Length: 179
Image 1 (cartoon, rainbow, N blue to C red):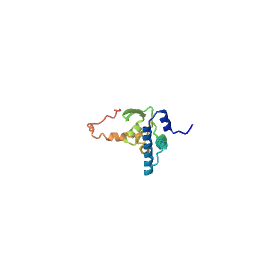
Image 2 (image 1 turned 180 degrees about the vertical axis):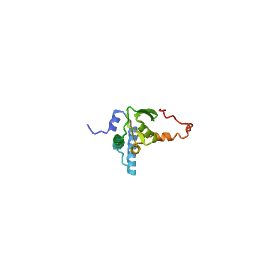
Image 3 (image 1 turned 90 degrees about the vertical axis):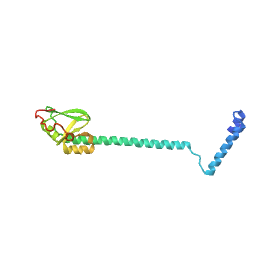
Image 4 (image 1 turned 60 degrees about the vertical axis):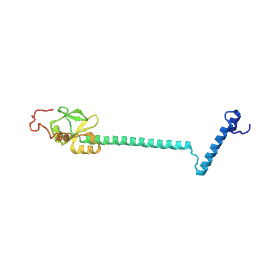
């Protein structure tokens, strides 16, 4: 069989007409002339899409790496805070009085001695949130924890000073009143 072009084969089979074949030839010739005139190289669509997919994959990988890095940094920060607090925590007294405080709009309770309670109220000691537990540390240790993660520090002395406009400030609170 002779090498007959696809266009001639379609004409012989009656699937197209001579005028349609001529129009296609004219359009193709104009396109090549325009490309030569403007020196435009035909775009490699497959290469373009491959390059675009590669760029998208690189961006996705970069975002995943940043997310992993932030997660690792959070773990390292938590480990530093836990080590700092566990090394410097003040002893709680399970047989002591209940001390109630709020953390993220929830009332939490720890049992501490009266001396430790006075330190917390005066601002010398601070409660630290370690996720599942709460520990009491001195102010200087709490400042170091606040440098790493300020949300873990529950400073009760600042909340007390905000209530300066108390209507009942002139009235004495009985000594035996424990909340």
